[in-house]
Length: 442
Image 1: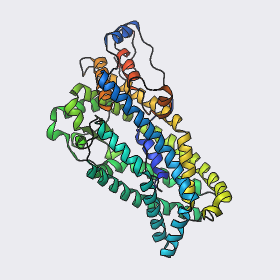
Image 2 (image 1 turned 30 degrees about the vertical axis):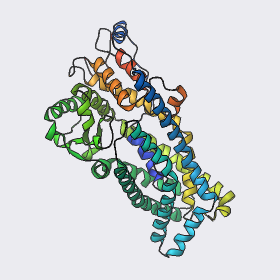
Image 3 (image 1 turned 90 degrees about the vertical axis):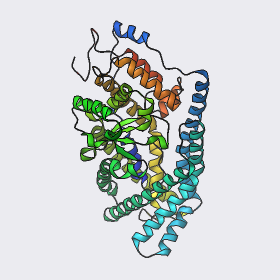
Image 4 (image 1 turned 90 degrees about the horizontal axis):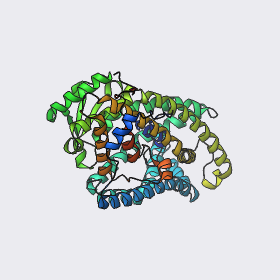
C-alpha cells in the first residue's frame, strides 16, 4: 500500500519505503484467457455487490477517502511552499544556528522545528481522516490511543529523520556536485534495512503480537502446509497473531520482513470474521509476493527510480535556490533549509508519478491474486468460491465502492477494484479441462 507520510526529512526514504512495502510490480501481466468451462463457472458465482444501506455508506466513504487523499497529497506540497514563502524555513535555519555552534544540535533542532510545523499543518486533515474512519466503522481506535500513535510516529521520524539529514549534508559537503549519487547508495541500503527491521522493531510499537500457535494451532498447521507448498521456510515460532481489533475492523493476513525477520502475521479480525479457507486465500496472496520475488524486484526498480529522483531533485533544488534562495533566506545547498527545497521537488515528482506507481502496484496485486487462488487448490474445497467470498467480505468490511470512478481508480488505486478482483476470481479455474495453471503443476 503508497501511504501519506508526514513531511519530514525522513520523506527522502519513507516515500520509497512505503511503496516497497506495498509490493508492487513493474511489468503488466495479461489475465489468462477464459475457457468455456471457466466462463460457465463464473456465471454460477455472484458478482461483488452491497445491500442498499451499505452501498450508500460505501459511496459516501469512498468520496471522503478520495477527497482527503488528494487533499493530503496537494497540501503536502503546498505546505512546503508556504513555509518557504513566508520565511518560516529561513527562521528555523537561523534559530538552529543561533542556538548552538554544534552541527548535530543544529541539524536535529531544525528537523524538530520542521516536523512540528508540518505536523500542525497536517493535523486538520489527519483529524478528519480518523474521525470519518470512526464514523463509518473502519476504525475503533480511541482518540487517546490515536494521539499516542501519532506521538510515537513523530519521535521515530525525528530520530531517524535527523540521522538521515546529517548523513545527507555530510555527503553534500564531501561531494557538492555528485552528492545525489553518493547519497543514493546508503539511502538504498537504509531502505532495505528498514524492510528488515520494521516487523521486529517498529511494528510492535504500534500493535500487540502473540504467537499464533497459542490460540490457533489448527490455523498454524494450515499455514505451515501452505508455506511448505510455496517453498518458503517460516517455522511456527515466526507465525503471529496481531491484535488489530483494538484499532480497526478490516481484515488481513500477510508475510512480512526479509531473511531472518520474515514472519507470518494474521489479524485477529480475520480469525473472528473470516473462515479458515478465506484466511488461507488471503495468506496465499501475500505468500505469492514472496515466492515470486516481488520485493527484491521492486527494491531494484525503486532503487533506480530513487537515483533518478535524487538527480532531478539535485537539479531542481539548484534551480530553485538560484531563483528564490535569497527570498527564502537559503543561500546554498549547504544551508539546512535546502533540504526543504529538495523535499519539495521530490514531493512534486511523487505526485506526478503516482498513477504510474499505482498501475505498477495493481499489476503485482493481480499476479498475487492468481498465485493465491492456485495455492489453495486442493486445500480448500472450491478455490473460486473461496476467493469470491473473500473479496466480498473484504469489500464489505472496507466499504469498497462496487463501481469506482475509472479515473480515480487509475490515479489512486494501488490494488485492482474489488469488482474486478471478484470477476476474475469467479472465472479463473485453470484446473478444468483446457486450463493451464501458471504457478502450480496439475
